[in-house]
Image (cartoon, rainbow, N blue to C red; front, side):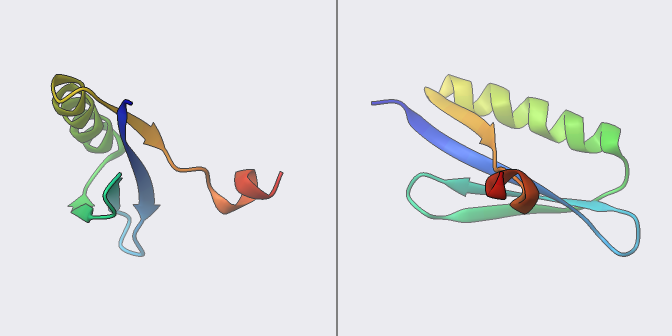
Length: 69
């Protein structure tokens, strides 16, 4: 069975971004106050590489709007 982690990107009121990652076991880790979308993509690329090295998949959590469709 493959392992899995999901992530969620949240835009902050100050214009920065937070990335919250929830592991299959239920633990959540957050990277806060990334300044630009490019920083978010860079952080996610590194996380994808790390998860792949552990044999796990990283997937984006659906937004509330998409989940309701």
